[in-house]
Length: 196
Figure 1 (tube, rainbow, N blue to C red):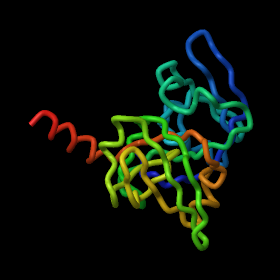
Figure 2: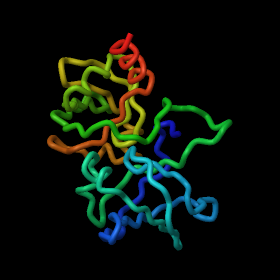
Figure 3: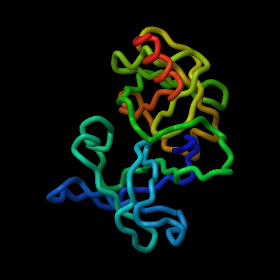
């Protein structure tokens, strides 16, 4: 489990297809002495398992399923990536409960400066839009955010300067594809309603 609070912006240093999957090597500022092989780390909101590590880098392997249903299939060397280590009991829950399971890929349709902040609108693939509500939570590229407004399959969020500066969200442009994870409570409530 994660909280959607990014703790490092890493960089893809190498990408290689293997006989099983695709392997990414990620440069990081994390203290890798405290990261075990088998540890879970969220990469732009996608939970992946550490399979190897070196000095200032670690490697993960990504299945075809993940490559097909997230932005990871487009990743190349040099790409900046939001990183978050898994939450531990007793950690501050500064964002919201995030599983690291990407529900879909959205598209940025507008970015407007508003004071020091940025108002961003995202188009969501259907039927995922049914699970997004005003003042609810959503993770975009692994960042916990509050939904401001929803109109059909488009929702908006406001990014304060801190979030814009210390995550990859400040690198977004119109047309960018982003990993989305809907609020876990919304998912279960919608499923209950469908089956009740």
